[in-house]
Image 1: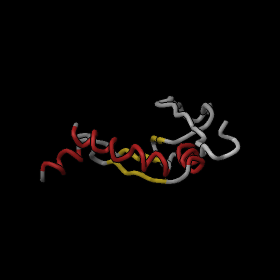
Image 2: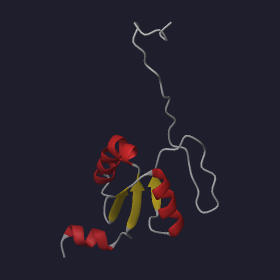
Image 3: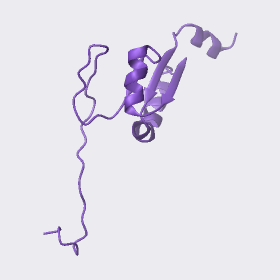
Image 4: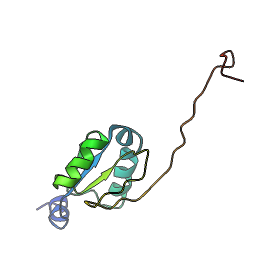
Length: 100
């Protein structure tokens, strides 16, 4: 067995999901950090929309998800934790009538 095969045998599979926006913005950084800590073994990632991720969590198809939500997630099927808040800004040209 190679080192990787031994390491993978010692870690249970983690089935994760990310929404497309989270995948584009955060996934590479997260996977790089896991790789640096040698914790990237047996990870399977699914990329689908937030509603689909919620359904996959409820059905047991994935174990964990990173997704965007405009409101707090309150659900009896799983626990959630707010990791980050983002502010959305409307940017208007100075020449537009709504700029003042």
